[in-house]
Amino acid sequence: MRLSDLPREGKFGPFGGRYVPEILVPCLEELERAYLELRGNPRFQEELSRYLVEYAGRPTPLYLARNLTRYVGGARIYLKREDLLHGGAHKLNNALGQALLARWMGKKRLIAETGAGQHGTATAIAGAMLGLEVEVYMGALDADRQRMNLFRMRLLGARVHLVESGSRTLKDAINEALRDWAENVRHTHYLIGSVVGPHPYPMMVRDFQSVIGREIREQVLAAEGKLPDLLVACVGGGSNAMGTFYPFADDEGVEFLGAEGGGEGGRHSASLARGSVGVLHGMRTYLLQDAWGQVRETHSIAPGLDYPAVGPEHALYRELGRAEYVAVEDGEALEAFQLLSRLEGIIPALESAHAIYAAIQRARRMPKHAVVVVTLSGRGDKDLDIAMRALGGRDGLDRDR
Ligand SMILES: *Cc1c(COP(=O)(O)O)cnc(C)c1O
Image 1 (cartoon, rainbow, N blue to C red):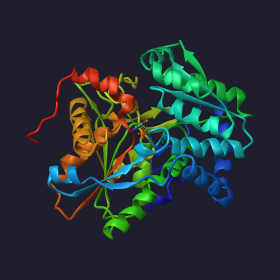
Image 2 (tube, rainbow, N blue to C red):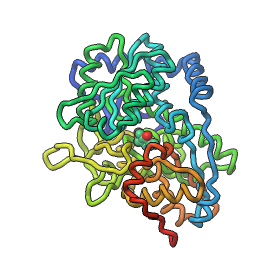
Image 3 (cartoon, protein in one colour):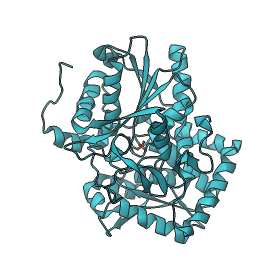
Image 4 (cartoon, rainbow, N blue to C red):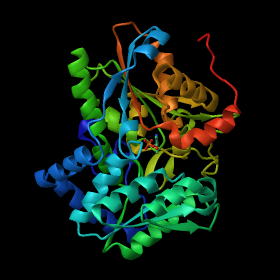
């Protein structure tokens, strides 16, 4: 079995699938049919690449981080600069892809759910540019914590519904979005933001994000004349990581390393490194649950990593040993956040700082001719408040490492 041929019948080995109420099955079937047809349609693909180039700023650079490489003293470390994509993160690759798909399907309206507001913002950007109506469900508690993103989404023309039910966070927003979709599927597309949820979402989002890995392949071959030895990315739902890994899935010499939110004091969001198999949000995968199957509270300093499950394709990669997943703690990510800022003049998103930390640990033990590529999923401007509070004005940089 070639990994690049997956999914088969909506499954990645024992993971994935379509665990949803019956009322949603026709919505998912319609979406799958439309996507499979458009995936092979050169006019659709050309239109998408034109937007990615002219509007979003692709290709993003592959940058040899010379100062970081010298500091670490091991493998050569390259950064794939998704932080330079319009919107400041990789999320727009997927939002544009699905929004365009929706328009080709004749849908007039996009709905999305958002936790910290990053995915809601990407959806609002894509909807504004493509002339689609956008409505975003956001937990009222999350909205309180992310006033800027709430304002940003509204500024971009999206209608934001604050969800007051349950814990007033992401999982309640997901319930509302699903209810909306089931009622309005004729003219509405539900735009999911990561490689999660029922089939076909994990496959479709992976395909839209794979532009990252395809560009890395071309760029690293041009720069080094060989494929990389190791690819590193952070894993929340897993979309920037899967977009990085997938185009190399069948290249045995290329190792994959995923960095999850290790949190602090026992609270974390490391579904792969520390979770167990179960069913959540329409998929069978690794998740954080208690002995009764109740989903645990999660924590990560990086808002985008704070999710209790992970994409099913990662679950399979973990099971097969195709990729390794490590939990990086809040403090370690903060250390990498400051280090990259000082050494390279690049302030990474806190999510991406997890990948940087994991990459440093690994690169240090690799020979100087080895090549490591880290996907810098986003820029850190959105996280300055969190970082400032966590560092308390202190200089947390450990200069001896
Ligand atoms: C949302 C987000 C993530 C986590 O999402 P994935 O689907 O795991 O990629 C990581 N980095 C940034 C900058 C994000 O905005």
